[in-house]
Image (tube, rainbow over all chains, first blue to last red; front, side, top):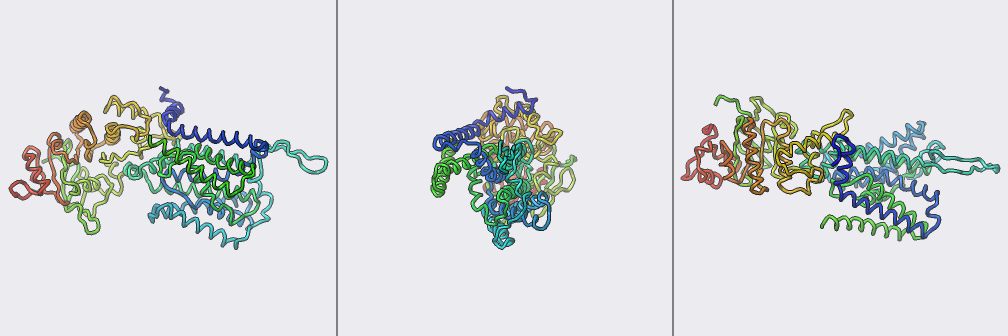
Length: 341
Length: 258
């Protein structure tokens, strides 16, 4: 028995009792480790620092989308629009830069555009009573169409070095100038996108575990009618989740476009599926009420490492899709078998 | 009667499209009184209680609580007046544990606005132990608990928060004999505290055991309202099934029973 007067001790008690959750995460983590070992044996350059950073960068975008999707999935919903919202947000940020705004406010405008798309999703779902699948499918087309219309389907480039800092910069990077005038990276540092992902993951975990809105997100997905009868404002809770998902998609869009230093209106197609897969591999249940940010992060890295490792081993992009599809089905199947007993 | 009723519902009507689920129904509830609400499925008793608990808004009619006219747009409005409901479905969030369910919608928070899980656990442990001393697995999701334990959580949630009026919708339907006895004891205890209880039930024996008055509904209307001492089980059965007393007496209006 832990001391109930200490909130963290008591948090631990909760964690211990959520054994099923733990088991899933442990098995996902084990899968992740096996993948790393397997790919390391298959390709010696897989374990290099540079490749590690590449994986980190690639995963950060899916991870950010996955955090928002986890919240939405826990409420019992789905958000198919994040890939398109990501593109629209990046485009809006780039246009704001072109309009003369400094980089940071411009990116904030982009994130707000994403949040607005999410809020619109929430509005359609809670007020017009459209099922989330249909509502966000609509937004998927609307946001993509807007991104293409705003740019005339051409990428926005020459955004300046400042725009690229978020996606390409790193903390504690040590660079030495060589006599020949070329820089030499001594320590590549921790990429900003990875730091951003970590901060967002911790913030979202805190929100889901320690705040009332988080409790209500779980309650809404667990039993919507019960939550409503208990006095939970179910509509507001859903609005919150979808708006967060939109804002995080906007953030992911800025990270991605910043990395390319170009706003690509056609970027991010099918990213929503990777993000959903990450959440599901991480133990989130599409019927609601179940899911953790930690699980989704593991899921995102499983997908990121699978992609990267298969690439390094020279497996074609087509085969990669087949493999990831099978992994998603396998993960859900194992979970269901475990639940049935 | 000189006492002011806790609840006075007057001329309540509820229409769903062309269907009149509740047809000009008037009922009252006094402090310390248990009123049994009987009738077939679809007779309108659950619908009437959903209106009183704020889960449904009436098409017309008036609700007075302690003499004051009220309108309930959502369950929280009714709650604010001390009206708590134990739903037949129990209305529990299956993936959450007992304390989270107990405080769902009214979570305790720390100074910084964080969830105070420690305080909620302590309070839940205390109130649940009073209802069922064997309740120890407080941290398990409620989906893994037994029917009796789930019922205890739903009851605890309804009586924990300064309750004055309690609506119990089939509280013993899913329970074994010892748990049913526990609920009966609890009802008598609450009654002694001056809480008014509406007991919606199919079980005529429960109603005769526990209730002071019985209101029978049929096809959305009140077909009989009687003090439990002035009717027999056969009378009530006849009211439920045929909508009239044996021998075809017409139903007396509700006031006759008060």
